[in-house]
Amino acid sequence: MRKYFSVLLAASLTLGVTTVSADNHGSINNKDAKALADYFDKKFPGVTTNDLVNGAYALDESLFMQFEAQEEFPRYEDFVAQGEEFYNTPFKNGKGFADCFGNDTSSIRPRYPHWDKKKQTVVTLEGDINKCLTDNGEKPLGWKKGMMAYVSGYLSMEARGKTINVVVPNDPKAIEAYNKGKSHFYRKRGQLNLSCADCHVYQAGMYVRADLLSPTVGHVTHFPVFRQKWAGGSDKDDGLGTLHRRYGGCNKQVRAKPFKAQSEEYRNLEFFHASMSNGLKFNGPAYRK
Amino acid sequence: MSKTNQRLARMLSALVISTGLLSAEAIAADSAVEQGKAIAFDRKKGNCLGCHAIEGGKLPGTIGPPLIAMKARYPDKAKLRAQIYDATKANPYTPMPPFGKHKALSDKEIDLITEFVHTL
Amino acid sequence: MKKLTKLSLAITTAIMMTSSLAIAAPGKAEYDKAVAAANAALDKAASVQGEWRDSRWKKSTFVKYKTKDGKTIKSSYMGAAAAAAADGDYASAMKFLETATFQGNMGYEQAMGQKNAGPRL
Image (tube, rainbow over all chains, first blue to last red):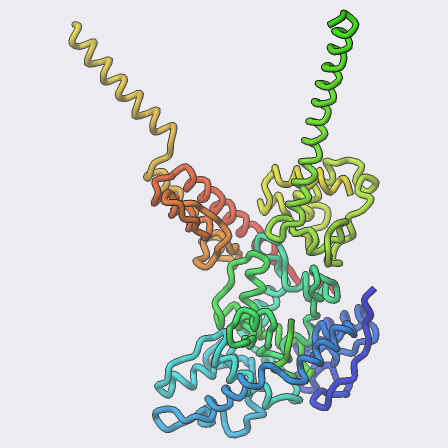
């Protein structure tokens, strides 16, 4: 019998009770987010919605202690430092990332993902990092790991404690993108016939072999993630990876053909997925198994 | 050899032969169950431990019910096979992969797994 | 009369032999058609975002095929079919293509069945 218990979080995490953003009240994504939050409330009595930023670790006491041990001397700190250095290094043309993103590094991550009215598409943080590079004549970074994950990790670290608020504007194209992401999340796919929801909604809190399934609410708050599995496959103990890297991995695990990182399919998915954590605080990067 | 000894020898060899045949059959039956167990435990095949507790398996998942008392739950072996073949027939929302329908396992492999699971 | 009979016998034998060969083993023409059919089925699945991982994805390592020179390659079903065809082993190639086609059809059916999937909270 697994025990669920309420966790008092570190200073960077809120002790407040708001689970739905005050702005954007009543919009499509916040209704969906609230429905999920209520669902997990019933499933995990004693675990608050805000606790869920720690994912599976919020659901099991012994797992949480392992997690705390990893977070005491975080293995992602060196890589985040490399990301910070890269972010602060001027481009060949003399400009820098601040010219694209502004000077307040704590307010960059919280702007993503968002609907871009002009481009009529979902824009992600990683997307704009590469846009800034290519607009200034620099080479773009790979989408899934390495420096992209380090820079994204740096900007996530800077935004810790800020509140997630993904806005789905009352624009039919934006709502369509959101619904496409929602559909991806709930559809069974692959030879194994599983949906994201199968594991992360209906079976959240259950074990697949020895892995505890994390709930959807609180999923994106800690990205880019330092994943033990990825670190194990790296000779530099580099476990940092972006959200779209994990999307590909999950699709592959159910024997579905993965989509390309930053493809429209995954950007729409992120649009939906991130907004399911509206009202929660950013706490990335973080360690995960 | 005396006539009695001859008759005894004949009886003994008949006994040995019949016992040998029985053993061969018994071995064949065990072999199917053992083969089924191997496929069930294979992470790239049935991977049943991913969701089900099974005797002899370590660190089982908790998504599905433990596989015990199977003859009581499925007195009809064919119904058990049908569930393994396509669990979505009974429940379209099930997280159990349709091993037969999607050909994740061959018909023969499903036969063998059914033999094994029915003994649990 | 004798010459004609010998000739017609030779022709008949030749026809029977070639036709029996065609029935016994698939050739490149049949293989090419099957590749096109498999890709069509997979394209259909892809059009509704329903393609599976091991049908033809370049990074799949699910299917094993042992080549004539003893190497074991790990690939998708289409990849294994191509390797078998390169070996002239069209029989194996056709089997792999059959699976790839099946997966394309199944992936399409699955995606269409999931059109209205949504939360059941």
